[in-house]
Amino acid sequence: MNKYQALLSKKRVWTPVKPERFILPDEAREAVGRCLSLRFLELPVGEFIRDAGKGDLPQLEGVKELLLSNIVDEERHDLALNYIAEVSGISADYETEAYRIVKAWIERPEHPVLKALVLERSVFFVILPLFRFLGGPGLRTTSADVSRDETVHVAANSAVCKDLGLRVTPELDKLRKATVSWMTQGLINKSDEKWYDRNFWMDQSDSLLYTGKAEGLIETKRARMPAFFEMSNSDLPSYA
Image 1: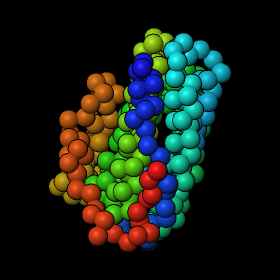
Image 2: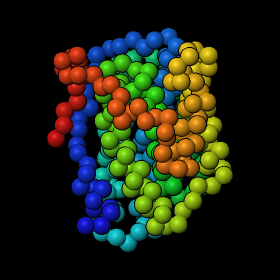
Image 3: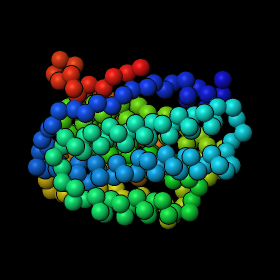
Image 4: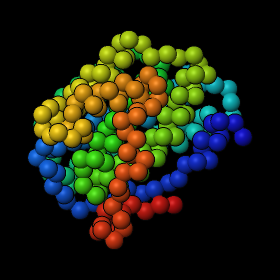
Protein backbone atom coordinates (compact mmCIF):
# COMPACT_ATOMS: atom_id res chain seq x y z
CA MET A 1 0.00 0.00 0.00
CA ASN A 2 1.53 3.34 -1.05
CA LYS A 3 1.01 6.67 0.75
CA TYR A 4 -2.01 7.64 -1.33
CA GLN A 5 -3.78 4.34 -0.78
CA ALA A 6 -3.01 4.57 2.94
CA LEU A 7 -4.59 8.01 3.16
CA LEU A 8 -7.69 6.81 1.33
CA SER A 9 -8.06 3.94 3.79
CA LYS A 10 -8.16 6.39 6.73
CA LYS A 11 -11.25 8.23 5.56
CA ARG A 12 -14.74 7.84 6.97
CA VAL A 13 -18.05 9.08 5.66
CA TRP A 14 -20.33 11.35 7.71
CA THR A 15 -23.62 13.04 6.92
CA PRO A 16 -24.13 16.70 7.90
CA VAL A 17 -27.29 17.69 9.75
CA LYS A 18 -28.73 21.13 10.41
CA PRO A 19 -28.13 22.02 14.08
CA GLU A 20 -30.42 24.06 16.27
CA ARG A 21 -30.24 27.84 16.01
CA PHE A 22 -27.55 29.35 18.20
CA ILE A 23 -26.41 32.82 19.21
CA LEU A 24 -22.77 33.86 19.10
CA PRO A 25 -21.21 36.26 21.62
CA ASP A 26 -21.01 39.81 20.28
CA GLU A 27 -17.22 39.83 20.30
CA ALA A 28 -17.09 36.76 18.02
CA ARG A 29 -19.89 37.52 15.58
CA GLU A 30 -17.92 39.49 13.00
CA ALA A 31 -14.98 37.10 12.73
CA VAL A 32 -17.19 34.00 12.67
CA GLY A 33 -19.42 35.68 10.10
CA ARG A 34 -16.47 36.50 7.86
CA CYS A 35 -15.10 32.97 8.21
CA LEU A 36 -18.50 31.45 7.46
CA SER A 37 -18.75 33.55 4.31
CA LEU A 38 -15.54 31.90 3.10
CA ARG A 39 -17.42 28.60 2.93
CA PHE A 40 -17.81 29.61 -0.72
CA LEU A 41 -14.21 28.42 -1.14
CA GLU A 42 -15.13 24.78 -0.44
CA LEU A 43 -16.51 24.00 -3.90
CA PRO A 44 -13.74 25.90 -5.76
CA VAL A 45 -11.17 23.80 -3.87
CA GLY A 46 -12.98 20.73 -5.16
CA GLU A 47 -12.78 22.19 -8.67
CA PHE A 48 -9.05 22.84 -8.22
CA ILE A 49 -8.61 19.14 -7.53
CA ARG A 50 -10.88 18.16 -10.42
CA ASP A 51 -8.82 20.37 -12.75
CA ALA A 52 -5.62 18.80 -11.47
CA GLY A 53 -6.92 15.40 -12.50
CA LYS A 54 -6.92 16.57 -16.12
CA GLY A 55 -3.20 17.34 -16.03
CA ASP A 56 0.00 15.96 -14.54
CA LEU A 57 -0.31 13.90 -11.37
CA PRO A 58 2.05 11.45 -9.68
CA GLN A 59 1.88 8.12 -11.50
CA LEU A 60 1.02 6.08 -8.45
CA GLU A 61 -1.95 3.83 -7.81
CA GLY A 62 -4.64 5.45 -5.69
CA VAL A 63 -3.83 9.09 -6.50
CA LYS A 64 -6.90 9.81 -8.60
CA GLU A 65 -9.18 7.77 -6.35
CA LEU A 66 -8.03 9.74 -3.31
CA LEU A 67 -8.41 13.11 -5.01
CA LEU A 68 -11.88 12.24 -6.31
CA SER A 69 -12.87 11.23 -2.79
CA ASN A 70 -11.60 14.59 -1.53
CA ILE A 71 -13.84 16.39 -4.02
CA VAL A 72 -16.87 14.61 -2.54
CA ASP A 73 -15.71 15.75 0.91
CA GLU A 74 -15.69 19.39 -0.22
CA GLU A 75 -19.30 19.06 -1.35
CA ARG A 76 -20.16 17.66 2.08
CA HIS A 77 -18.33 20.52 3.81
CA ASP A 78 -20.23 23.04 1.70
CA LEU A 79 -23.53 21.52 2.79
CA ALA A 80 -22.52 21.38 6.47
CA LEU A 81 -21.33 24.99 6.55
CA ASN A 82 -24.41 26.21 4.71
CA TYR A 83 -26.48 24.57 7.45
CA ILE A 84 -24.45 26.46 10.05
CA ALA A 85 -24.91 29.74 8.18
CA GLU A 86 -28.68 29.19 8.13
CA VAL A 87 -29.00 28.75 11.90
CA SER A 88 -26.29 31.13 13.10
CA GLY A 89 -28.21 34.35 12.52
CA ILE A 90 -25.06 35.81 10.97
CA SER A 91 -25.54 38.70 8.57
CA ALA A 92 -24.81 38.12 4.89
CA ASP A 93 -23.04 41.50 4.73
CA TYR A 94 -19.64 39.85 4.31
CA GLU A 95 -20.55 37.66 1.36
CA THR A 96 -19.93 40.21 -1.40
CA GLU A 97 -16.33 40.66 -0.33
CA ALA A 98 -15.98 36.92 0.25
CA TYR A 99 -16.93 36.31 -3.38
CA ARG A 100 -14.16 38.71 -4.45
CA ILE A 101 -11.68 36.70 -2.40
CA VAL A 102 -12.93 33.45 -3.94
CA LYS A 103 -12.53 34.99 -7.40
CA ALA A 104 -8.95 36.01 -6.59
CA TRP A 105 -8.08 32.43 -5.62
CA ILE A 106 -9.74 30.99 -8.72
CA GLU A 107 -7.86 33.37 -10.99
CA ARG A 108 -4.40 32.65 -9.58
CA PRO A 109 -2.36 30.78 -12.24
CA GLU A 110 -0.53 28.38 -9.91
CA HIS A 111 -1.07 24.62 -10.11
CA PRO A 112 -4.57 23.84 -8.75
CA VAL A 113 -3.30 21.33 -6.18
CA LEU A 114 -0.87 23.94 -4.84
CA LYS A 115 -3.72 26.44 -4.45
CA ALA A 116 -5.80 23.80 -2.68
CA LEU A 117 -2.91 22.98 -0.36
CA VAL A 118 -2.31 26.59 0.66
CA LEU A 119 -6.00 27.16 1.29
CA GLU A 120 -6.59 23.99 3.26
CA ARG A 121 -3.37 24.05 5.30
CA SER A 122 -3.09 27.73 6.18
CA VAL A 123 -6.61 29.19 5.77
CA PHE A 124 -9.08 26.39 6.51
CA PHE A 125 -6.97 25.16 9.43
CA VAL A 126 -7.22 28.66 10.89
CA ILE A 127 -10.96 28.91 10.31
CA LEU A 128 -11.77 25.52 11.85
CA PRO A 129 -10.03 26.11 15.22
CA LEU A 130 -11.55 29.59 15.32
CA PHE A 131 -14.96 27.94 14.96
CA ARG A 132 -14.14 25.47 17.73
CA PHE A 133 -13.09 28.11 20.24
CA LEU A 134 -15.55 30.89 19.40
CA GLY A 135 -18.63 28.95 18.21
CA GLY A 136 -21.44 27.00 19.84
CA PRO A 137 -21.92 23.20 20.10
CA GLY A 138 -23.16 22.68 16.54
CA LEU A 139 -20.31 24.72 15.12
CA ARG A 140 -17.71 22.89 17.22
CA THR A 141 -19.02 19.51 16.08
CA THR A 142 -19.07 20.52 12.42
CA SER A 143 -15.56 21.92 12.77
CA ALA A 144 -14.29 18.64 14.20
CA ASP A 145 -15.85 16.57 11.41
CA VAL A 146 -14.54 18.85 8.67
CA SER A 147 -11.10 18.90 10.30
CA ARG A 148 -10.80 15.11 10.10
CA ASP A 149 -11.40 15.28 6.36
CA GLU A 150 -9.08 18.25 5.88
CA THR A 151 -6.25 16.45 7.64
CA VAL A 152 -6.34 13.82 4.89
CA HIS A 153 -6.71 16.49 2.19
CA VAL A 154 -3.65 18.39 3.39
CA ALA A 155 -1.59 15.21 3.55
CA ALA A 156 -2.72 14.22 0.06
CA ASN A 157 -2.09 17.62 -1.48
CA SER A 158 1.26 17.93 0.30
CA ALA A 159 2.32 14.58 -1.17
CA VAL A 160 1.22 15.59 -4.67
CA CYS A 161 3.03 18.94 -4.47
CA LYS A 162 6.19 17.23 -3.21
CA ASP A 163 6.07 14.59 -5.93
CA LEU A 164 5.54 17.25 -8.61
CA GLY A 165 8.12 19.67 -7.17
CA LEU A 166 5.58 22.47 -6.59
CA ARG A 167 6.45 25.38 -4.29
CA VAL A 168 4.42 28.25 -2.89
CA THR A 169 4.90 31.46 -4.86
CA PRO A 170 5.24 34.90 -3.21
CA GLU A 171 2.02 35.99 -4.91
CA LEU A 172 0.06 33.05 -3.52
CA ASP A 173 1.51 33.67 -0.08
CA LYS A 174 0.43 37.32 -0.31
CA LEU A 175 -3.13 36.28 -1.17
CA ARG A 176 -3.12 33.85 1.77
CA LYS A 177 -2.09 36.63 4.17
CA ALA A 178 -4.73 39.00 2.78
CA THR A 179 -7.41 36.32 3.19
CA VAL A 180 -6.53 35.61 6.83
CA SER A 181 -6.27 39.32 7.59
CA TRP A 182 -9.72 39.96 6.15
CA MET A 183 -11.45 37.07 7.89
CA THR A 184 -10.08 37.94 11.37
CA GLN A 185 -11.20 41.57 11.33
CA GLY A 186 -13.24 42.47 14.37
CA LEU A 187 -11.05 40.63 16.86
CA ILE A 188 -8.70 43.49 17.79
CA ASN A 189 -8.89 44.45 21.48
CA LYS A 190 -12.08 42.49 21.96
CA SER A 191 -10.71 40.30 24.74
CA ASP A 192 -7.52 39.41 26.58
CA GLU A 193 -7.81 35.84 25.29
CA LYS A 194 -5.52 34.88 22.43
CA TRP A 195 -8.49 33.59 20.40
CA TYR A 196 -9.53 37.25 19.94
CA ASP A 197 -6.07 38.39 18.80
CA ARG A 198 -5.76 38.83 15.02
CA ASN A 199 -1.96 38.58 15.20
CA PHE A 200 -2.27 35.20 16.91
CA TRP A 201 -4.29 33.75 14.02
CA MET A 202 -1.95 35.20 11.40
CA ASP A 203 1.02 33.67 13.25
CA GLN A 204 -0.71 30.27 13.20
CA SER A 205 -1.39 30.60 9.47
CA ASP A 206 2.25 31.49 8.83
CA SER A 207 3.44 28.54 10.89
CA LEU A 208 1.03 26.11 9.22
CA LEU A 209 2.16 27.17 5.75
CA TYR A 210 5.90 27.33 6.42
CA THR A 211 6.33 24.41 8.82
CA GLY A 212 3.11 22.39 8.63
CA LYS A 213 2.61 22.90 12.38
CA ALA A 214 0.89 25.46 14.63
CA GLU A 215 2.15 25.25 18.20
CA GLY A 216 -0.37 27.88 19.30
CA LEU A 217 -3.22 25.55 18.33
CA ILE A 218 -2.01 22.58 20.38
CA GLU A 219 -5.25 22.94 22.40
CA THR A 220 -7.20 21.68 19.40
CA LYS A 221 -5.90 18.20 20.20
CA ARG A 222 -7.62 18.31 23.56
CA ALA A 223 -10.25 21.00 22.98
CA ARG A 224 -13.47 20.43 24.82
CA MET A 225 -16.08 18.93 22.53
CA PRO A 226 -19.72 18.84 23.60
CA ALA A 227 -20.82 15.52 25.04
CA PHE A 228 -23.72 13.74 23.35
CA PHE A 229 -25.99 14.33 26.34
CA GLU A 230 -25.35 18.08 26.14
CA MET A 231 -26.67 18.37 22.61
CA SER A 232 -29.96 18.11 20.79
CA ASN A 233 -30.21 15.10 18.48
CA SER A 234 -30.58 17.54 15.60
CA ASP A 235 -27.02 18.78 16.26
CA LEU A 236 -25.44 15.35 15.83
CA PRO A 237 -24.13 14.20 12.44
CA SER A 238 -24.50 10.59 11.40
CA TYR A 239 -21.53 8.45 10.46
CA ALA A 240 -21.11 5.55 8.09
